[in-house]
Image (cartoon, rainbow, N blue to C red):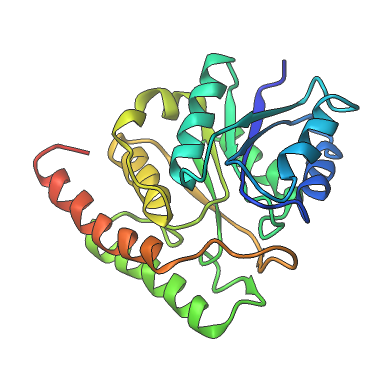
Length: 241
């Protein structure tokens, strides 16, 4: 079994899922993929099933959950699945091509060369985001500035969802205490890794707005992130992460 597993949460991504799986599988590094589908109503799970039972049966896996339970819980489920199967490097990646599968080897290389957690960053070298509305770009950019200001964490793209972890990071972080579901989940995982003295390294990527399917952004996700950062900081004063 290879060292690397890419976790891809899905909810109604039938327009993208086959193509993104093919793109990852075409890489030289021989990644495995775990799709975690939250009861998609558009046939996403069935499309993955066809590939699982076909040409990628030894490299592609799917776990189906009974409903839309949130991004954070999907990744926690996937992290535990990966740790049980002894993967050395575990990735987070979106299904919609906003994260370029060709950047997976770059994130892996960063972890092979000293990083415990590598982050595909939109803001470490200026702003490298394509086709986002200006309003959404400003929210994202200033959200990361807000996180740095409140927490002191030296990460320019705190809400980034394109990440590679060494397994010891996920073995150390108390996953059962990570309750956030949206952007706050991404911030919390970086905050916990930083507080546990792991080496975080941002790798510049070009982030592209999805071309197919619908965004899962909501006001609830933004609200959770805004107040979740304050909660994390306050708890950290008392040694609670």
